[in-house]
Length: 144
Image (tube, rainbow, N blue to C red):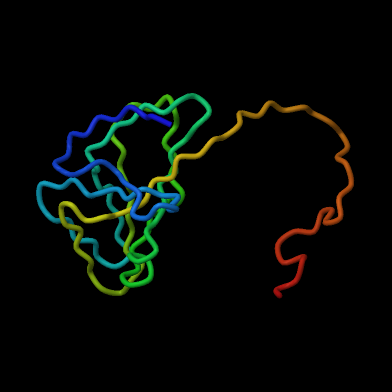
């Protein structure tokens, strides 16, 4: 699939790091480093704008290494870039650790997954079909 992209950053386009990777790395596009204090969140620029085909979205997800090693994650994970959005992709990072973390220009800050989606229409009803789970909610299938 080809996707139109405008790259106003000085960094390479998003790319898959391995042949079977689902997500492409996104890079911070910063004039100066940004420090996140514990529990602080900030919008980090990427310098990228995309034009997705109708029926697709770009999901912005955390990078597992940043989350595990530094407690840095994407606050609204997964963030969604809709097919009709043409503005710059920004990544909302939050520092869930107890120490400051500095994001530098060119750091890999998130990953982007291109995914197909459906648009739903509602069919109002007064009865839903029975299922094995039924109305069992949180924890209803046990903790194991």
